[in-house]
Amino acid sequence: MKNNLPVFKYHPDPFATGVFEEREQPVTCPCCGEKTSVVYTGPFYCVEEVENLCPGCIASGAAAEKYDGAFQDSESTDEVDDPDKVDELVSRTPGYCGWQQEYWRAHCGDFCAYLGDVDYQGLVDRGILEEVLEDPELDGWLRDNPQSLGCNPYGYLFRCLHCGKHLLQTDYD
Figure 1 (cartoon, rainbow, N blue to C red):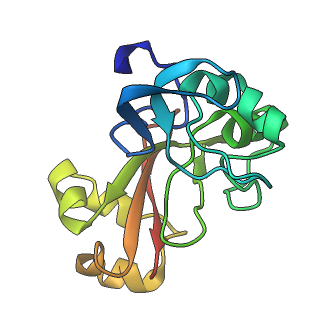
Figure 2: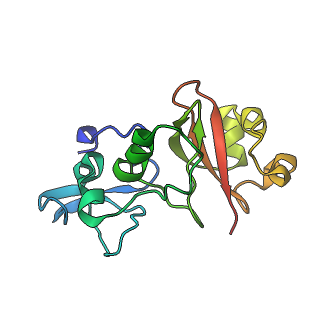
């Protein structure tokens, strides 16, 4: 089933980041009424308690429309000028789970792709520690103490869709 997923530009591997799960027994998506073995387990901000959304209803925007909901708070993002990009992120992209309020990074005038959680060693292993530390938006304390990343604060890794630059969003418990 993982190979039949819609493509999410801003969240390219929602299985790896843990917001999609494959169930042994299919369940019914509350939005479209179809059976699905892949369900969304990430944040969805709406009045109703909605569980087991299928990837198709997220990608099409049907879930956000039906429940007047959002997968990301539009006020908790870096700024982009194109309202269509904001709509795609908020209404048609799986969110991610943070310790506190999730925040989505942008670069080159577009939202970045969310790659998942990362700690200090993960940045070192990927060879991007110095690149991430160059970000002027990065918390100054963390820039001076990058080894603390993974305990408190915690890191969420993003990559620019246009230039490939890696950016980090940090969260403190």
